[in-house]
Image (tube, rainbow, N blue to C red; front, side, top):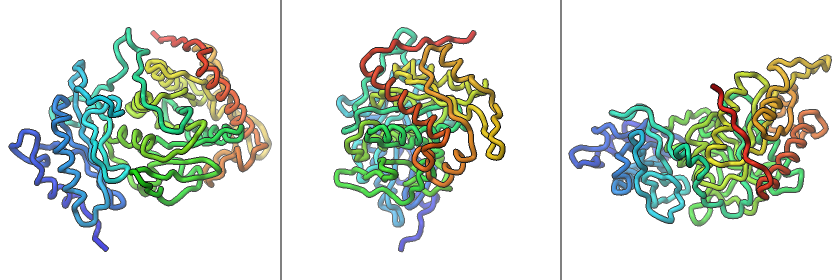
Length: 418
């Protein structure tokens, strides 16, 4: 059995790859991101001038092949990171490749996750560059001109479950919403798009790795009658994902399009928290049918939830509604209720912004216990108060989805705070 490859060995191999100007190698020129090695696979990106991204695709392929040929390496993900000066135009793209706003997306791949992907955000700490600017939201007069992403074959509707910040129970809400939709007779899949903190393997008690199919596709895992895909299946639970924005965007795009989802009525996507490049990728790469925003009643969480809602509005994605999670705490001993984070804040915010309020979920010991054990409440304790709340949220979200697809709801009013 081959010994595990080291970062130093990878760097040594990459010293044979000439840089863009031919005067030095890509290591000496400082073009490489942090190199991540996990389970025999190597991940890194190469920073290039966006105007030359297409011309330098051969350099990316050479670097990928150099690493793949090393003993102990089972695969590699190498992407081109295209820095762009603020206000500059995007680099020209080849037509018909389905890569959205990709800057130098790779075309050759030998395994489902061995190709470059869309990347326009400048990497943190790029030589001679400032922080990258998210692209694609358009000018003020073009905010609703969302690019039409290519649909995922077999998937009728894609719903993003998002939050403005972490720690509000978004992933727990996403998995119980998905199971609620399944209980309503829909064929459902769930994609864990939180690359840095994947939760679905734990929430659904899933382990193992997806099977590779013909045509460079992956067979999704299955749990409780749902198709499931997560980066947590591809890397160890304790392995940190030290990836720059373009690598995250590439991975999300490939988990959407290089997975054999089959025929699904709904694909629920558990988004990472915030309003960054992952959300932008999702909005531009596929036609999202709608978004569900999760927040606690706390004012601090609602501020960030408002930002999330505003972002989906900017990219012309219908907001199906807001969910108030941890609406109240129910004591397991006396049954008394305590509004630890306040109460009713999300409902008030939904009314103020003119978007649907999908429901409120109480915080109970059952929610935490079933989440940790991989037995979501909707299937393990369907008569419990939280499970009933999740079912009601699923019913309302489905109704809003059908209404949004029919064009029966006006766009939400976004109130900009002064």
